[in-house]
Image 1 (cartoon, helix red, strand yellow):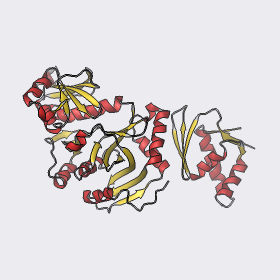
Image 2: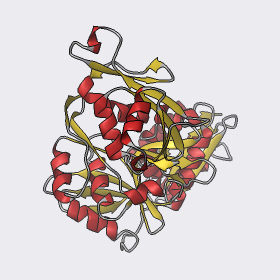
Image 3: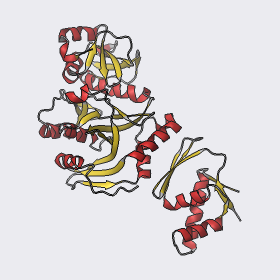
Image 4: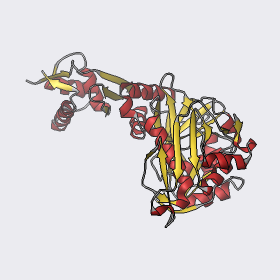
Length: 309
Length: 91
């Protein structure tokens, strides 16, 4: 496959509207169709380093973001997300077509990729060791992730940790990092070279935009990573950076609470998670500045923190 | 005198890290975190039936605690809780 930037954009646009394009995202091949121009522009901007073809024998997901066939096609125009021909969500304003694609892909993967234990977490890696950052929405996980990848960490995912059931290794699924509200300007200041999608207002999450992942992260999509740390991040204004150990038994419960398919996997989910907990150090991180957080992450491994086993 | 033991008919997966246990019940899919005291009670009952009094005695000795009404109440509450979760049962 060639990458998106190597293909003539007119061809991509034409194919996107007609037979669709096949985009390789980590281990998944996604067949995408859309006639919506804002989505085309976002795709060619943020996925420019991703392998793409106009033909493929197989796709994991067949998705389409399109205008509905009713009056809302034109009047206060909307977009709908469809997977395998089925509409998965309520329609959204047309301006939200691109974020809808990202949210839809999250839904596709978290609802179907049960060959992995999937945790709602960001995952980054450096020097062969990966950090899993499980966190509920609003904890600052994505902002932290965007900050760290601008400082040399490889992005495996900003949303879903894919933990391989057989050996517990982390499988990359690098996609544009989702930012919302105040975090958009935070990252604009912290990493002014970041390439961002246009901002979209008035979504259910507020104002959102997405940051293009580093090219290196995209190109290394076949390279799994060994987990070394679980860090539960929490942004707290005006706080000093604090990294404190979390007892492993408690960490297991917290990760399970953040897992999409822990219950579905049953015994295998528990065993995979227990093996993960065996091999990592677990910490809480409270921080109020990205500079502080970057320093803390840089010192992981050299921390004189006695782990609360 | 009530005796207790870990339910022999339940398939339970147990992991211990330091002083806490995580117990996975294969039948229900529930995952339980047992803090230090409850972990000791559970481990005591894993392979044998033990009377309520003997559980209290064991916990008092293990943790070097004074045998008083508070301890007795706490241990009984743990036993009831573990039974409620179907991890142990009365014999």
